[in-house]
Length: 179
Image 1 (cartoon, helix red, strand yellow):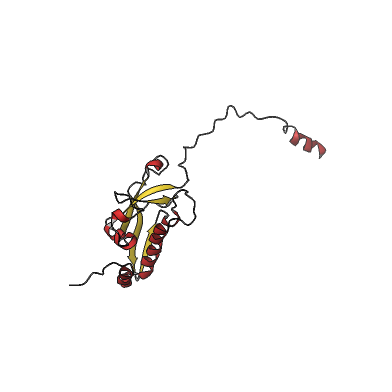
Image 2 (tube, helix red, strand yellow):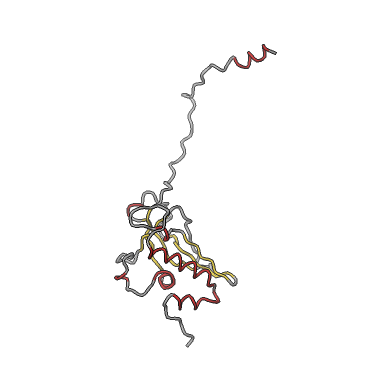
């Protein structure tokens, strides 16, 4: 039995050369670090999630071109088919500083999508308005104005299609009349 053990250990001290073995190189992965995206609201998205009364010029978080910066950290890239009952409430594109690290198909992806389903409503959100801060891209509570976008999205989803008018009233938006 001792002879068998010695035979098994004879090759333990030999070094194996890896110089002749070539490993395939994986393509470089996109960074998973957070970055800022510019979000542009649709007319319905602006009315339901963003508008609070002041004009665009009075909104400190909104650029002159109507773009609102939000933190993005690898959220889903949503595309809404025209055949779908879903509605894009806003779209996103990478900020100028983030174009190299952003996924190629991020620009034009829906940032927030809403669809009624049965007696309920589904709202999908890709960026992180709740944790968008002035200086850091940390997952900490961010700007109050942008956290309200998430709060309003939750209220919108909770209201469902049958109760849609109450949220418009609570958001200080005139309700449509059936005249």
